[in-house]
Length: 427
Ligand SMILES: Cc1cc2nc3c(=O)[nH]c(=O)nc-3n(C[C@H](O)[C@H](O)[C@H](O)COP(=O)(O)OP(=O)(O)OC[C@H]3O[C@@H](n4cnc5c(N)ncnc54)[C@H](O)[C@@H]3O)c2cc1C
Ligand code: SF4
Ligand code: SF4
Image (cartoon, rainbow, N blue to C red):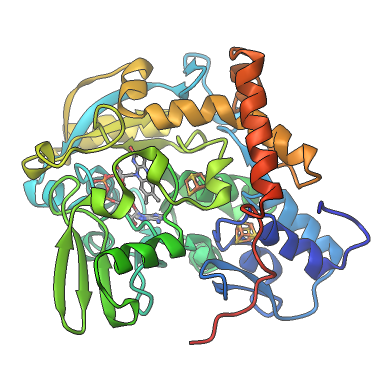
């Protein structure tokens, strides 16, 4: 199955979902208009676009040009300065630091060291932006994130913490742009890739979005993975009223509230002991940019080896690595530290990030061959640029690339990379 011009516009849009490339960012709803496309919870459990009105090919062409399932690019060239350094794995960077939120309460509440929350509050209180477009806990789907506009310290604090379930921040992009006021976008790397693509279609994006700040992202949890976690824990999924994945320590407890009471687990109980146990959407397995190359700043964990251990995490206060990729990001980092919003411990180099994030290094090397596997199977191959994935693959022995390429083909043949045609989920 590939993108063909003999398909109807609706079939072409749904092919992105059926081929496992949609991460449910919400942008296609903004591109097409909510009277034609709705990004919402579907029968597969994921958020995805459903065609609800007349859709034409020209609109679907615009979606293919902006969707982060079909097009992912690195930092726009205009934001790469002559003195910006570039690492083959970690991409463009101007400064990398270990840091945490200077306010101990924010550091405690945050997923890691609370730097995204601290920066959000700093951006508002220093009047650099009027609001933040970000994701908070969903009002009615406990495992999901929900787009929100944050105007105050309280709003940003209410959005603290990683949400590992589906989240569609860009369903709110038009509401944000219509305000015609400067704002910041806090999201996952793929969401920022989508917004950078959309900037080519809507000039308001570059005029109004002053900062794009992301977390480094290894992938989100599948709806099935969350159900399996509830079952392992002996919790009836229908009884769940709230889910906090992490935060309040680093990583802090995974807290499930149900109609019968609250239960706390370790982060490892949700994700498993190591990367091989993570239940990820197919799109995340072929993600060419989990490290936020298109963002001004990217914030990460600093666990050596990529994950916490049960003993150290009892007392870990949380420390982020932050990569400043643009001049704006570098300036914000320095100003937030000088004005007491962030505590910077010391500077890092890209090799330090590889120690903290071996799974990102592994994926960055593997992903070009995985994309070849998509092509072999007649699938849509995402267009990429400025991400160096072919260059990295050339550093590997041919057998290593063949292994990744064949693995992707086999995954597709086994039906592990195919989702049903999206239909609106009805409770
Ligand atoms: C799906 C996912 C995968 C991740 N994978 C990795 C990884 O591989 N390596 C790594 O180092 N770190 C990873 N993280 C990031 C890590 O969990 C922390 O979020 C990051 O270190 C920032 O910490 P913080 O304390 O500054 O965040 P906080 O101060 O707690 O702020 C978190 C921010 O993230 C936003 N947010 C939360 N969930 C979502 C979401 N689903 N979509 C969009 N925005 C969201 C919130 O709105 C808030 O602005 C991942 C996070 C997520 C959500
Ligand atoms: S990834 Fe985003 S733009 Fe692409 S189909 Fe999914 S919701 Fe739409
Ligand atoms: S791994 Fe990539 S595609 Fe998956 S959620 Fe993270 S940034 Fe998006």
